[in-house]
Length: 422
Image (cartoon, rainbow, N blue to C red; front, side, top):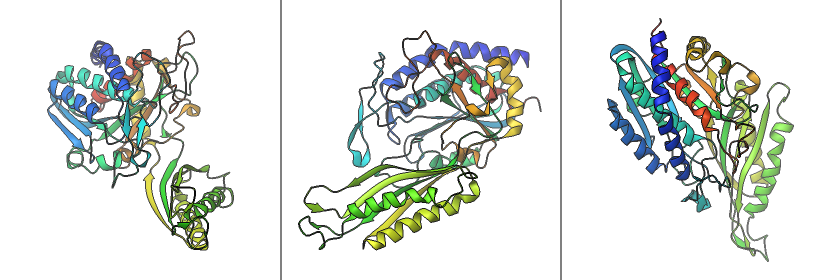
């Protein structure tokens, strides 16, 4: 085992500079969910150049890529995942590789695009890990599946059907090669100064909550603004529904037991000042911690929406997307910690539950049928750095590249050491 850890460290360090270069390239050329055409092409070409035994692209209904490398010895299949998509945000970092790109994004039209959540880092680290693992093929037991997933940040308004992890887990190649264990990393910015390279790894709940995402369409009847009683105003009705939804949590949920929020992120209605709007759309989410309340939360939204819509002589349609919670398998956590200590150092493994991921990730779909780990990697900038740390999804998001080596080592350690000491 000691020789194996030496190989992990050496091969990971050999790909670090490439990883940083890939990350900067992806950062400068970000792509939105299900539109990661350039990104996925670079990934697939890289996997094929490494001699990865099986490479599949155009997955998940769009741009997903899966590569499977076969080891020299029999053993289990282990999965490693990275998400590829960026966000519709205008970057203001002023780094030399800042994005100035735009893309079409559903009903929002042409929007600026930025990697403000670190998916460029996740993708580059997994590409580096894939190269390190291929260089260790003669020491590899079983298979490693590299999953590059589109649309973790959800899809555009005009997308039809499943996407992201929910679509990837239904691909035939994934089902036929479903891993025995899965591992993923996400960058962390809510961390102390000087913590770059920390890997937060705790058993049990690894994300703050589970979530229902919903899209609401309220249908009215258009007319002239001078005689609004002739039409049915979907804008006013939508405003009433927006306010009414605020009572779903405040008057229907025991917030001492079930930590819950309901937020509306978009609201669109009307095209001209003197025309009664015939359609209002809004998108939002309910986040909560009590999984047993899954159906109840959904029902309360539906009841609120439908009754208020009816009171305004409108009709409403709701589309739902379920995002399950992130749970780390306790046995996997116990197995990987002493191994990670040999590669990134025991002092860089953080068990502080206060630092677990405060958000959601559709990686949870991979963990529904497969034991897995979702860890976070601190990319907080050093106090002496020119750039300061900002939260993910911030237009000024910036990452400490010194942390990337521990991300690569963590991915490689999990893949090549899983199961060999059983």
